[in-house]
Image (cartoon, rainbow, N blue to C red; front, side):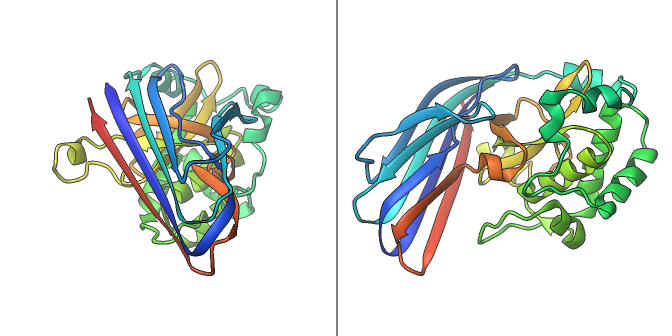
Amino acid sequence: MLLSITHDTIFHYSLPARSNINEVRLAPEENERQVPGDLNIVVDPVPEGGIMVSRDLYGNLVHAFEVEQKHPQLRVTSRAEVETVPDNSLKEAACGLKFDNLNDVKSDDSLHEYLVDSHYVAKNPEIWKEAVDVSLDSEQTWGQIAENLSLHVFKSCRWEEQLIHRATTAAEVQQNRVGTCQDFAHLLIGLCRSIGIPARYVSGYLYDPGLDQGDDATFTGTSVSHAWVDFFAPEAGWIGLDPTNQCWVDENYVSVARGRDYGDVAPIRGSLLGGGPKRSMDVSVVIKKR
């Protein structure tokens, strides 16, 4: 499926800003599920030094720029094309793998940071107990336990749009049982890590056929960038689950960046001088099937 994605972000300032330095992670990645095409990132005002491209510690593509001149607002627009393919083989493999080999997973250095605490995901006794209770009621395979943990988040939490974005920790989500896709991803990561399943945060987009065709939305949380979770199963590898919509990740999903939690993969992060006490941000994402 060939998709076109337009991601538009406008920062409004009550006073002119300057020395506005930003990193953006908006480029669809290349993997076994998707092949990226054309990408165009436009910044207004135009950065005097252009846009620099690099990779971060997790291999994510990063575009960085600085706007030195004074400006009342900053606009970053990304237009991308990507082709996705359906693939259920990893899901089927994970659901057929007996939940064992935990010591092998724990001894794999490449998985270590996806088993330990991170900024937004800290394992506590309450999260551990919740994960154990759910896992004991599951068929003892890697895929079935992970899927039931995701279903548990989906059923026990209420999705609520945030007018002012603030990423919350797994512990906060567990206590309040309300949040966005980012928050649900943090809780699922915490549940997985608590019982020895490596889990990482994925940012990207979710194509909604209903919205594309002018009908009601098919999924939740598609008007802005989306987030879900990759869990690792031995012999199968990394597989995606979306606790917001209780879906296995398929050709409707476009991944952009992966990390320990939201702190590693925020779509836009920066600093500036000035800007005044009142600031706001407008974000829109439009995904169309070509």
